[in-house]
Image (cartoon, rainbow, N blue to C red):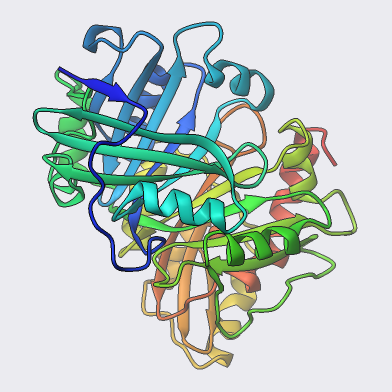
Length: 395
Ligand SMILES: [Fe+2]
């Protein structure tokens, strides 16, 4: 039997840094119809529809589906009642990311530390326990509609068990009868973990949120060869990258900048009720060509890169001292982007928006030494994005 109390009974003694992050616990989406969204992400991106919680499991207010692939856990939630917050947020923002949840040793200590650091509570600690174990969660507000939950897990709900197919938390059950799960096991897309997660904030607010991540979550500015503002006539955005102490999670923060045409960041904000939120999740693969080919075969709609891009890209990478080992012709056929820095190169590709509004999208990224984010592709991308914005009448 599941019991939910607001005050945790037992808190594990914590002598270490309360904000030390163990993992990205999960990324929670608020969506209009979790059951249907689960099918979309399973069919197009190869996620396992692994667990669920809904009326049939005793959840009276919301339905959630846990989708997994590698070490990525997406939690899709829909409200079942008119006053559920997911319904109001879907009305304002469409489907999108609500919560970037972080596994910590002790959710209550992490929450208290973040509050002491000036963070604002999203929700107070909630303990959910049954005879198998306990999950404690507590949330703080970050930019716009997004929050960070701290999650600590014990007993059968501990993170190592969850990674091996254990139950997500009390109240969840394993799914049966989703044929797509068998197909996905036979045809893996190869997505491994969340490489980075990008937020769009309002113009002039980037440095505010950089400071917020420094003080509240005790993140640092991520150091790499170009860790300075990115602002070109083409990119029409400025971006700084924040990272947790152990670099477990990197969170670039974008703000719109003056460009020749309307910034893609401003377009996002205009279709997101002028409210900041998560712009994209970059999912890491060890084999970009395989992943992109599989995803294209499943119908994932990627940004189209003009063929002229491949006229100069190999030289650009070579100039930095790297040779792209992957088949150049296949890279061009699959429309994959390449960038390089002092440490190596990377392969990346961006999907078109994943819902009707031009808001959230995914990036598929493979790193060959490079720790940057594809700055060298901004010019080519801007051209592609501008074409898409024009098609949407948003330029
Ligand atoms: Fe990215």
